View 1 (spheres, helix red, strand yellow):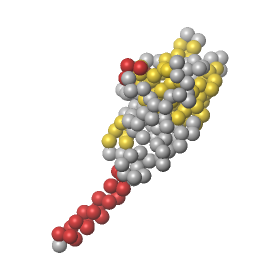
View 2: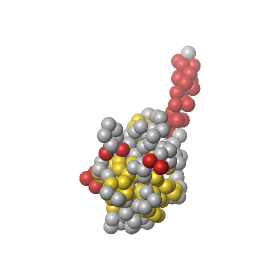
View 3: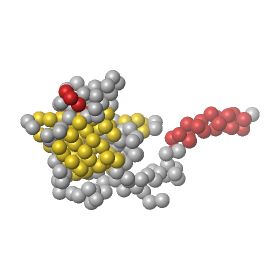
View 4: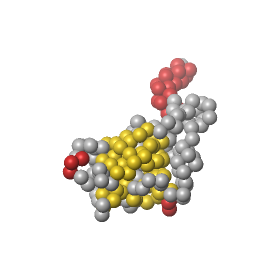
Length: 192
């Protein structure tokens, strides 16, 4: 009778355990992923003519991409938005907008190349909740808002490499690589 109960419990919890441990190939570490960059274009949230276009970046969802911040249900479900201030483009973490409680932050890394940056900085003082000026030849690291990670919560990290900063058009296009695993700062997939 005890063995019947043990089998019943195992069958009952097996789907949950598969979900929890299924994200890892070997059960001891993150599974493999591909560090192929996605290309994203953001449209200035400061311009009325871009209403309905993607002006915010969401690095929690897969694939990473632009979202329309004025869409119902999107409030706080993004990490940074493109805005204009004094004729310049700025990338503003969600935390910089009044009324949004977000832990999203941005680090500006002007002295590191896209290819050299293999890991998001551990130094939390490098990340800001304030808008940062968008410039060519600068690598940005975005830390997401707190996100669901199976049975817990954590942050995701992405690195951005500007392709085009078009102040006249009010657009910012860039390549982005995001580590799909929570609290993993590496931008290099684990070896198989």
